[in-house]
Image (cartoon, rainbow, N blue to C red; front, side, top):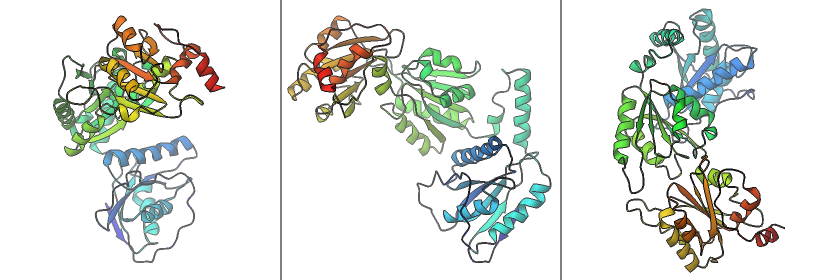
Length: 428
């Protein structure tokens, strides 16, 4: 470990070229005046993809290490240079800088060149101290990771959890999308392939779980309205316990974890327990399910506002009181409201919406078994009862529902004919 302190006045650096990663975790205020910055130093290459690897490593180190100030820099060939990286950290308030050589080699660069460059960079400020870490070469975790990769090549089913024995775990709150596995994000697919345990909900398509390694554990914690439920406190405890065992935990939720998915509750529990976590947004059913039914939520001349509501109030499952506050929105989308469909329609009519307002109910949206029933506020409840529609269903209310006669493209349909001319006239 190399230590140093400088005694010169700050000189303003020249403009920095190249892409920098600027304090993406800097939302919180510094607890004192001696903020620590991290400088991740790569060698520098004429191959830009190699340089991007260093920048991405810096980003991941900042996120996973929960470091508020992290910048990449390069020893030669490309920019930002070590001097520019120092200047960027100092400009963000860093007063102590840890320099980490992102090298596997313990050679002359890390033993000689980097200390020289760091000393020169630090000399531009009399208010900054620094340390240089040892490089990664021969670190026990690097050796263990190498052994793991070799064994995976010999037998992919063995030794997946070797690295977790000496590292803290992490929880990824991942949105699984509305159902169609093709709507998974790339990041969700990558994390599923790395998971030690997947904790999943009722609305997660079983086909999505095919992307989980064969030796990873799958734990079902679904909640079904009126049926069996796993208490939220038990789910929170499970996530914390498995992360404390050093595992990579994927908490897989239908749709998006932060949209009526209780993802924020779980994230707060993890933060309170000191567990590292990451939010991976998913394709929400709010927009995607209507899209699969040929219904845009907004359209010029028909709707310029959208209200998104839950139909079931937390705790007792009764109809949410928020419905009337959203009555004037161009389009109203109600999740978890099929059991209150008749009440929803009656309340909106009572509040002043025309009883001829178009309504669609979409069940199992984006699945092959998708059903769509359309009607009006005065008829939709009777139609839904006749077809025995149950959860999971989404209710869409507004003139945009008329567009599905022209835009319908997916799935089986059970529809009532609705006059198209008024909507067409409004569009033109």
